Image (tube, rainbow, N blue to C red; front, top):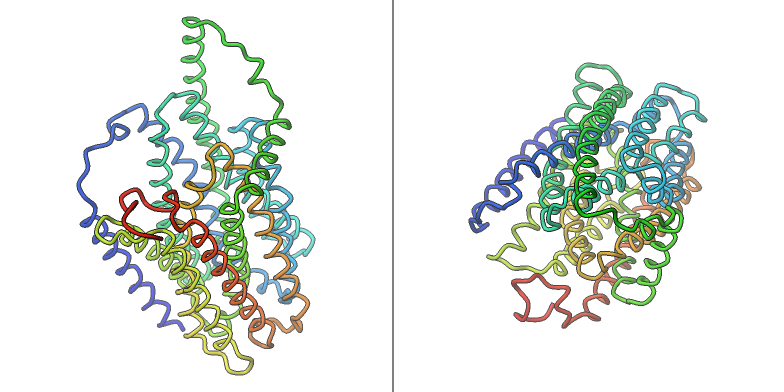
Length: 481
């Protein structure tokens, strides 16, 4: 497995470079966007990305060796499963709070809370005490919920309500963040492998490296973001003097009332539109099995001695390749629809789990086939996320999207928790992932869930066969979905 992992990362990185060059060649030349030429916007975008990318980097550093760390502390697989369940359960509990805290505490203060909570989470990894590790997982669930909402909330609020930049410029910032995110994920695996295995600092080293990254993120939020808010406040005061103070009564709605209204509107949208319901079913089924995969990939491969950091980088590079394939497939040359690519992604994920039910057979493990199946699953993820994001943007009204997505995440995390609890109930206590039939049964269950997701996708596009909202702009009127 050692040689296989290094050959795979070389091949996958070369593939990503080739796909990126091909995508750029097929993309027609465009005029320089006004956002790029605006120095105020570039400065605002830069100070946001400095903090946000540091937060993402710290998050990715904790991916490769989390399970390995718990095994290093001699915990059984069943005990580790409970630790993962605690993390997922805390995500369920803190998801509503993560939407409410920016309104109650302030967006910048909530970002600082994220930095503090995630730093504390990383420091708990120094302890071998099971209860302290559970506390760390709870803090990790809170931090993950905040990361997925708070930074974006600060940016959108400043972009639209304070700086008064055009809304059309917002996607350019998050597209840049997504591009960097793939590179950070691959790099995090390489750096984690350097610390844990090449320098022999052990599996806790990547978690300790994440702490100064989070401190740096908090420093940017305290200094640059504070300066940005101060300058924005001065500019708004000038406008108030010139135009008069607006009536603030409607804006003074309490944070609790705003959050409650968002949830009610989201639920109403979910129940009134069958397309939204089906899309939520696809998301819950697909993404819940990803949480189970995150738990199982290490015990499946680790007994065969691969460098886990390099394997993690391979998985992230495969996901990057999937995203680049999405760009190529939806380009003006090929014009494949996101709905087609969503079907391909779900089918590919089903095939991956089907392979894993055979490659993890008790007493006959085939690690190379399992590694290939994991790479195919990550490739499917690279196709899935931009496809489902496009469809969410078309099906769910923008003003109700936050509430609807919050309801989507509830069954997602619950399904993942149930899967890990089922695994905990079956595990014999020997660890190793492949010593019994529990892992194979879990992969079989994931394959069944992918079939259910495929049925939901087919139902969605049967329902909206002639719905132009589900198609790319350039392909409307050119045929059915």
